[in-house]
Image (tube, rainbow, N blue to C red; front, side):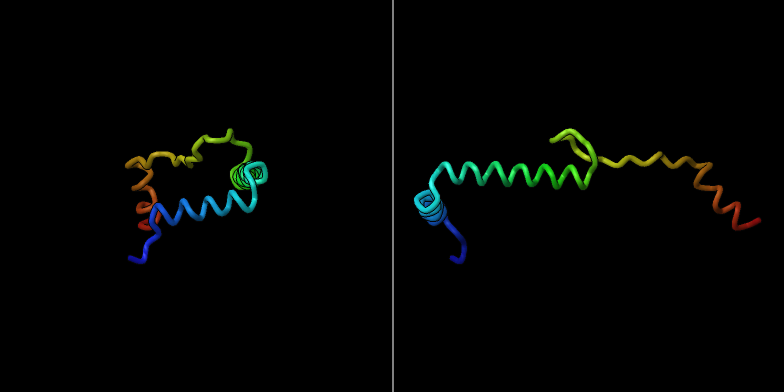
Length: 74
């Protein structure tokens, strides 16, 4: 109750295919894919598509963690 079932999705997809046709939907899908790739490229720089963007930070050493405390005392 309240959710969309599999049969409702099938009916909606059938109506969409009848209204737009497969060629137009294929073109629309490729246009959306290109737009997403362009957006990702502008947001993350020139990375290869599909490569995860992970920002790495240097590990914190004990000496580096203690240095700000020594600065406060001095």
